[in-house]
Image 1 (spheres, rainbow, N blue to C red):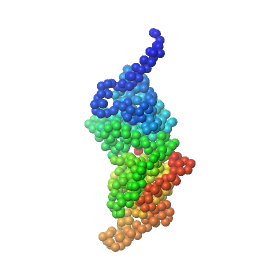
Image 2: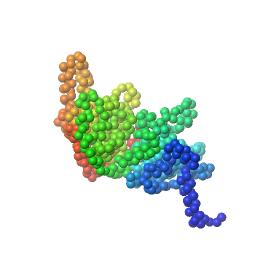
Image 3: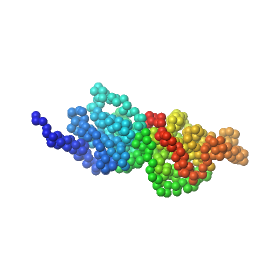
Image 4: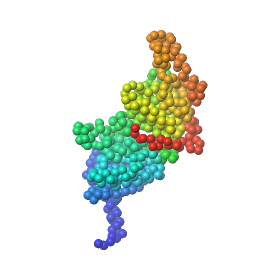
Length: 514
């Protein structure tokens, strides 16, 4: 057989590249286009800055001879690119190629990209859509022998931000990486589960609806594993870009400080008008966060989950910050089990990626009752305290109205914040003064209205913002319209010094879902 010339080899290279770029088949690509769903490479084109993609593993194929010719890029497109000029690593699953099923070769591709991202400080984006493990690769003794060869495959130490977009049927690796991610977005109509509804139906011998098994409502409202659900691939990729704009490249650096939009100070002047004087009247705490943060910078995480707390990324004077705010619109702000999980994971996120934390507090305590106890509420409360006690980025707590009970500590009370301030309307009792009178004195208002009201006033006065300030348990009492300026100055101090806002990352290996 004659040796190949240089021209022959170059032609072969171009043919192999052409085959990889063609992906699974023209028919499958056409079907996706008709449904308005992007393919793996179109998703990269949309996500990344034009011309910035550096692909690795384009010529990879299955190691099994019987499917080698049907596995261009082995079903996963991987490499590096830029978003708004910043380097990222990325894996985009090609469902047109054997359902982007997990195999020996594409597993090596993921491992390579993930290791480079961790070592070099590059955010890693996983564009998920996969059918699970590839058969017969995983069958029998030989199939077992290729599993678990990387003992750190599922270890998460948060060296870099990890983001997942769930853009179709997601089983196997797409599910695992979404559950390991700091942030996940799902296109409505996509599913995420351990196995498909078909496999699950066979296993449990009853019909299973894909949406009930792993649809967007389940994961944004019940499990909390997904932050956002959107209508299209493009919307999902836009949200990925926005989320990353608040993040640093990796854990060793702080997020960059950006320009402050004009008019950012104006909303703060109206804060006092947003909160009713009556402690029993509710208000929208999203508007409070928006009134303090830079104009247009608020980005809520898990807005449909654990709704009695609001967790939002935002910017304050150009700096990325994280807000944990009580939300009286839901259960009066009483903190339930889902809110506890949400707050704890948010603390871990902010501490791992050097984002200062601001508590905005108006909470009546934890939501008590049999349901919470069955879901181990005491353990969730202590998980939160364990995480908070290990946070090393700056923490500032502002009490606006109620701040009762043990939840006072969970929301940055005592020495669990670096700086505490309160509005004049703040009350730091162990419980609502009206309930306190009943507990302490066994008195109801209908029994003796005058004595009851006097005792309520006495208890409230003893736990006022001024009472705590006199004991230096609160370092400042500020008017609502001073909040933005106070926080801006406080963060300038707290983020200064040798380490600035780069923390020690004690929480970097905290479980990503719990």
